[in-house]
Image 1: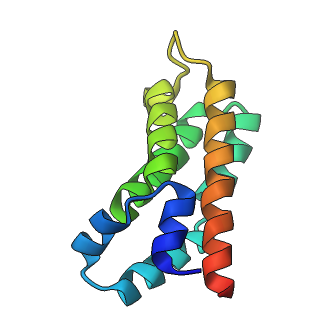
Image 2: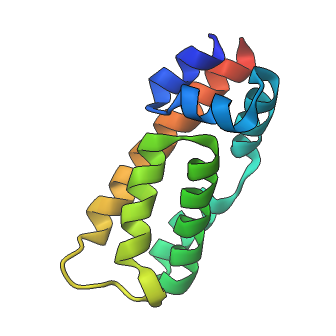
Length: 120
C-alpha cells in the first residue's frame, strides 16, 4: 500500500499533510508514530469510568494529532466529541455514546490503514 492509498482509505488529506511536512518519508514516519499513541486507550477507559475531564483531554489530543497529520475523518469525529465534553462535562444536546462509537470506528479505520501501510 502506498502512503497516498493509506490516506485515501482512512479518509485523510494526503495533499495537505504532504504540503505541511514536505516529504513523503517524513509523513510516513509521523503517521506511523500514531500507532504508538495511547490517547485512544485513555479515551475508552475514561469514558467507561465517566471521567469526562480525562476523556476530554484524550479526545482533544487525538483531534490535535489528526489535524497535524491530516487524518480528516478521525479528526472530525474527535473534534465533535471534544466539543461534547468541553470543560469535562457532557453538554446537553450531544449523544456522547454515539460520538464515542463514531470515534471508535474512525480510529479502527485509521489504525487499520496505518497497520497495512506499516506491513507493506
